[in-house]
Image (tube, rainbow, N blue to C red; front, side, top):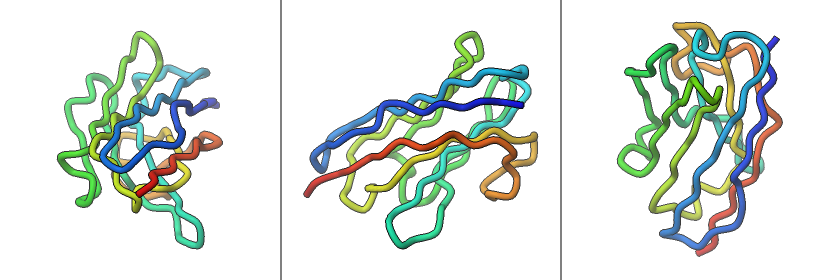
Length: 124
């Protein structure tokens, strides 16, 4: 079992920045690929970014966040981050982190453990 707790959400003006954190506890954190997903009101949960296990040398992003968001991990702190810059109103959503196996990729089904989510609201 892996427990995930997100933090760092909040209200920010368009063009601003936020850094989300996801602290993990339980099994060996470095063995898991980690992902960030988001869900806006009335919409399905969608993939935002993912980082491979161990060193996290492989990263993947939703096209609309490439160049603005950066995912990273600190295995010593059992934490994955999502740095979000140049935020837009359409980035408003509840953001979830998730832990999965090495082939988790961008599919929700590939992730086994989920956090409770943190709200990000971007005002125009």
